[in-house]
Length: 248
Image (cartoon, rainbow, N blue to C red; front, side, top):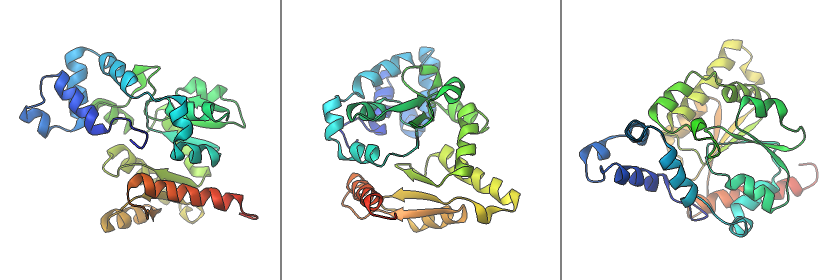
């Protein structure tokens, strides 16, 4: 949304309009995962929706170069990025700014990704393969088993790495389950004091969210900007500045 792309609300409204449910009580009461599930059942697949998203969720390389958030993410040179975005704008940012990367969407990609590059893991799928998208209720339920190739990779990476979560809604059941599952696994080992730290950046976290996440071993970092985009930009700038300082 910080570069002018449609919000999830726009996606839901489009699905409802396409299904002639825009004014229906069914549309108002259903979750977006349920609406996406109904969309797939009515149309037989998500191809029609994916085609619309491909058209609507594109921005030019020049816009990406001018996006402060994208420039900061690339400048931080993370070795590993997990994204739940379906579009390729993060990858295009790396291309536009001349930074090599490897995109990971499947088990094959995990096995063949070039070592030493930033690995961008498309955790909820990619437009290039509509079957990989995690969008409907069934998709989310299937991922709760936490045993897909990308889930196994994530568990391994989370055990070995300090992780920073940015831009996630804590109403996302998959993310909440994932964080709880990681905490639970470490508790079972009896070695949770050795667990690498987890951080979650939020613009305006509530007291409830902060305390629940703290129980799962997640430190919440609060934003200090006027908007979520401004807060995130300020935070990433500080990270870039600290990385440029000696002995950081």
